Image (tube, rainbow, N blue to C red; front, side, top):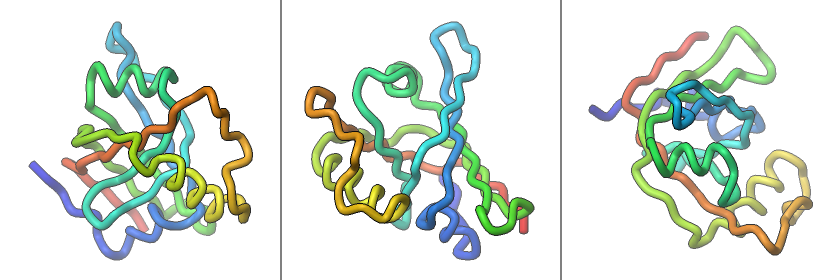
Length: 132
C-alpha cells in the first residue's frame, strides 16, 4: 500500500533537515543512521556509499523507517515507513553534490572518495505520520 507525503510536510524532505533512517541488521535488530534526504514527488531519496552497513541492510531487506524533524520547530516532524523500490548508481555523484549544495552551501561534496561508489535508494512510502 502506498502512502502520500502531505504537501504540508514535503518541505521537511527538501529542506536542510536531517533524517534518521532505520534499517534491519541480519539478526533483525534495528540500525539507525542520520542522513541527508531528498524527495522527488513520489519517492524519498537517500544517497549513500556502497559497502556501508545501511547499504548492506537495505540490499538484503528493503524495509526502512525514517523520521525527519523540522530544524526550526522540533515539534513538527514526519515519519515514513516503507520499502526500497529501487536503487541506482546512475546520477548518484551529481545527486550527492546537489545535496552538499543544499546542506553545506558548497558546489561539490567535500568527502567524496573516488574509491567508493555512490548509490541512490528510492523509498516508497507505505505509512506516513506527521505532527505539527
